[in-house]
Image (cartoon, rainbow, N blue to C red; front, side, top):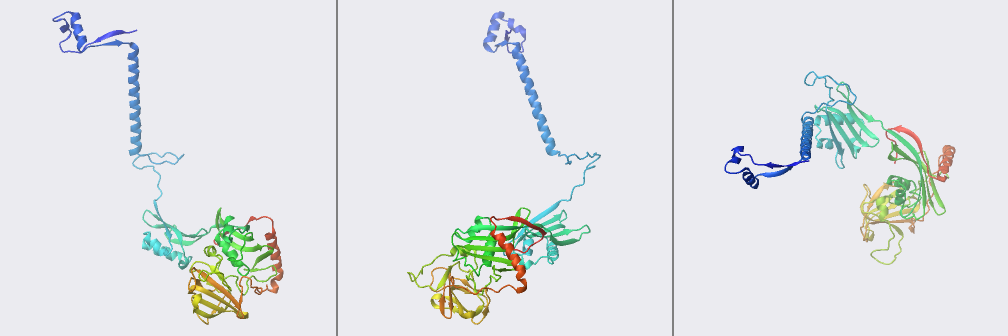
Length: 472
């Protein structure tokens, strides 16, 4: 229930002015028509307004309290207390607070290519006094001339004094310099726990050995090592065919779950059609099943097998003279600068320019053989007429000199002056194993053949060791 309320503006003349000069009704009417308002008053509306004012006051107080809390935490931070730790009494500025650990500064760096360890430390603004100490402490343990890279951490205290230095040249080769309690420094190699697994790897050739190994998750290092073992038996540039199969029994070294490198290869097998070639590792050498060394007098190819040069390998028609010419050699397409190796021990007959062959090296070998290497871009160090060379020695580099439109090696072989096909030539077997080693070798051979002939690949743990292992 409510009633109408007349609201009239307040004036300084007081209530009596309503009766002066007219009746009540007349004066009230004029007031209503000018500035007065009539409002319907309800008790419920009054209660709503009171509640609204209450909510406004409450929200304002809450907002103010939140601002106060934020201000206090921002400008008056409380000291950190470890969870669950006892509360220390405070009796003065800083009283009862826990002693803080001395602050440390860490400088991280990397030894880049074409730089030195010393230069890298200097570029990272490590003080010279500490650089001299670091180098002197590590010199008995590290051959700085052979360093090809690495990462390091220089850790110092708030005074700039060296606390610890860590130098990692590989995942399993870490060196440390540590400050002792007396302020001196000790250096040494950190022991890294490594685990070795013996793995049998099986694959099939699609387009190349590199792609076949990559397809089963193996790296280039294993491909090159595999090809080097069979370098006297298989020309991996020319002899590889789709469908050829291969097997390798090799050690794989891990640091936890991280693969570090390949270890020793124990046995290899390459199968092409009905022909199977096996290599049994024994005392650092590889032998066939009959106990003869796989190393023969002649390599099957003068180029070391690499991923880059293998991509260049292809069949060729003579690019300048046209048509199909009698070609008594083998062309190996490869990038300019690819190293060329002597296929056998011998003596250099000539080294220089030879007409359409461009720069050429000719080597005479035992048993009437002579090898020819044409279109070279340059010659190996010390290669000249009359010098003796060893098998696998670098005698030159792939080029495109002479009658050539692209980088490649023209490799030829003659015997007693007659051209021979290097891909089909059969060379004498390697040296046999020593008689006193035959029985032990036979046991080793049977074990390796059983591994190679097994139906499935395997991956079994062999040993745990520390530090660096010899490997590929």
